[in-house]
Length: 625
Image (cartoon, rainbow, N blue to C red; front, top):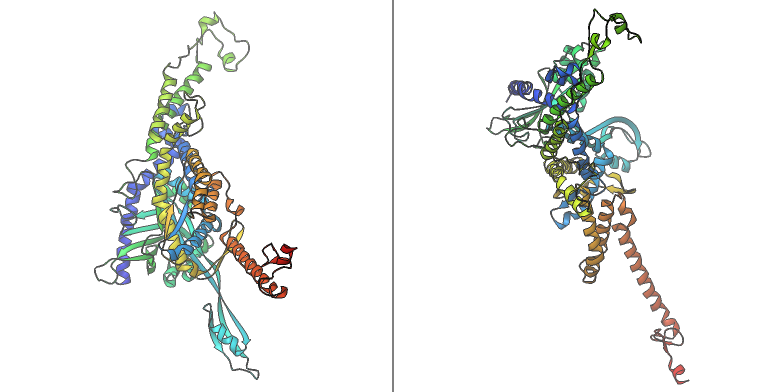
């Protein structure tokens, strides 16, 4: 397929995806955003009459999102280890152990993994569509040098993969050779975690999942300077890039662009042309490039309706990982129901009711007055003087409106709303730690109630772990195995760890464990304590467990108790092996010393003077004496 044909197919897909987004997806996203922020403008349109006198807003959905994301983040980024890399065979066990330490270091220390995942989870709870992008950044700088090397060093230099020999001169009298060469210095070679706004994703309207879509694109605004740098970094077509940059000066915005960033609506051409913004689409397309009737996965970069780059997608999957609380097997983006719809209904009712109550209270505290203008001096009334002049009885000339009492069932209605919230969302006053007055005063009863209240949060956490974290970490393992081509030094619990590229290859898999709620952790701690006290001693005597199992159980219990660096209080496998080797050497040295001492004391069996064989028995002469 020619480049013009690819461009025609991709641009048609892009137009369909943009139209679908603006017509069906964008309004839903904006509505859920308004509910989360409890926007004043949103409620002015929803309740125009009461909004004229009160702008009170309920933040029920905001509170739900902040409550729900906390146990999820605590489960996945808490003190306990939730990510396990396992080898598919005994030969992969060491590679799995090193890979697990590597990816945990990459997520938590090399990159701001906690904050990226926090936004990922928050978008999933708010919009039912959180997207994380994982890709590998590799950048290098090439410098040229001219130096003189001996002949044997020249051969070593030529064998280095990061060195390119440009020119070799004639050797001098001593055999030294002048060499002009280029050396590549690696500036960055690491995975990158990015949050992608739900407003920047586009896909085929008929797709059921992102993975099965024939067209998926990420939209972004970049400067002309960044686009030019992509010629060297990503291999963009330089001629097309120059044409796009020449014509840059304005961008097309959607409704959501202006809502999220109102300044974009008034943005014009910059004085410095390198600052001009350009709309760029990174498209992942299934297209029959070679005409064999089979779709190939391609990455096509588009700017200003021009193709900048067409390359095969060597990963054979998307680098995007979506999350949602309510998965819809028939749609990429759940539009029929969301947490915002469920919690928003109650938020709207509470907002309307509270505004009416506030208006009523305001009128009761400052009631309206009916004044006979013919019997009262209105200037005294308006200026709020102490003495108001009247020409008749004040009780007849001025009459205050009688306050209307709030209906007795109003507070009961709010309690009903709260019970609906607990039933619909699973956010109870027990699992928020807000229910001090309870009929059940026993610890067992309260624990059972909290456990039941945490079931919904536990289900959400397990769904996020299986649908998002697990495939993302599998992809990270693959990226490390493919792109890590140099040794890597990391620190694990303040201990340096050297990882070589060959050390992490193998057939590896990912397991993700989740622990939500204090009662779950306490149950695990109790089980581990019982194992260490009752099961381990018997298993050790029978040869069924050893020091490794004891350390693992202790570390797990301490981590669940809140000690993040528990492993540093035990010897590592290397320390144990080193101690065993030292003990073996000491035993060998002691045996060799005893053997050397025997000939020096009168031959074999003489031992120490006065002892037979050196084992503490009296000599024959001493027994007789």
